[in-house]
Length: 204
Length: 204
Image (cartoon, helix red, strand yellow):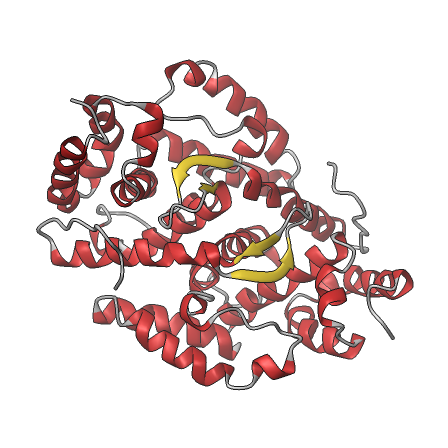
């Protein structure tokens, strides 16, 4: 823990939670490959996590059966925390994705170890479930995490696509779980892929 | 709605939700008076909202009786949305606080009117309840909203206090509802007020 100048009170658990709160402020300097919609700069992990948590509130009528929206929102809030130590891994960079799992596991040990045991386990479980996408809550939360950057790309002249040069197949593969979870977005997705190709943002 | 280049699909409600998602990305350019803990710049509303939503997950064992944590987290996510149009009002600027209520009501009409009626009402109700602080959920969410900037001030040499020059009484009044809701933070609060005075960050 490298929070300088933290002056603790007399409740150990409260001190731990306040220090953790201060530590995770570092999410604001984990920069993603996605541009803000106003194209002024790239977004950071704190902004992205807030954005998809709000989406999880907005799209609730499209959530899969059995999805607990409140729990999915929590998943959105915590899903990228380990990037404070592991960094953001660009989805369309195969080289960077090598060793991602191991890197993130080490980061998770370091991060969640700063919390009271039970709470650390709860947050870690939420993160792991999110990554597995094998429950209604995690499929729904992960759908938000895939749709948000796609939306940004459609509104920022394919910002990320121009950087990473993914094939259409790679984009389709990335977004497929979201469309499977919320099929109502398919026509919007298809039209925007078509436009992206026409505009030269994505190459056939 | 001024989302340029939004290419809609064939589901009207999905289009509405996607456009709203794009519109609220403007939260990233509503700049607050609180500094990030690394003191590199001031935080924005998206970052702040994410940060207190995470705090609401972390501090759950200290929530008042009857508090629904999932609902309090949602409140944290949406509590500042209207500032996209109303702007952030500095808590320690009496002049700026004149007309705040009317300004925010107009902003709320404009913002929540962009959503399907029922959903717009749900988000507006969450925001209004948050502001009233008259339920366990809103008292808890509002406590996070008061403690987070206080924590930042203790770790950034009183950044906001040096800007707004509040009296200790003003700071006490601002934080009192949070301490009433979570009395376990009181010793940490008192010690940090004492240090702030000693360091000259707050004037007696």
